Image (tube, rainbow, N blue to C red; front, side, top):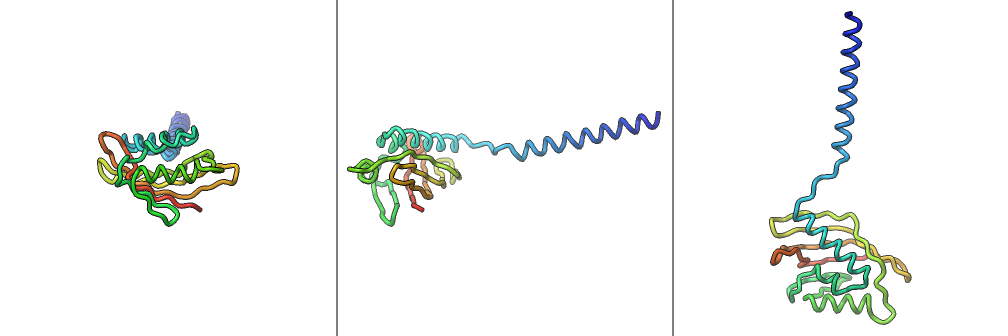
Length: 158
């Protein structure tokens, strides 16, 4: 009887160790839950990618603050204002002999700076016939009139 109980206890302890290890491994693999604000910002980025890949530059620009105070830094150039920014995109990607390519964003990190502001970092990549392009970006988002908008974009090429 003593041996049977000892055997049962050993099996019980071994089962508990295995269960604990499995639960611990599952907890480590689970992604952290995104806040409501981060999900909304991610949705803006997803809509931008979808619009770009439809060749819808105006739809892409919906993610930006439509204001003369929008700032866009890229390639050593500072562009001020929504209209100047869309004009820059048109000249660079829709001008004569230009292509927009297929856009992807990756390695997105969204950090809330407060209830109505966020700092976003990531990578962009354009797959184009003439050769791929890509680099890093840093965005400042603000919630304006209940919508998350990019108020500053600093994009670099690699």
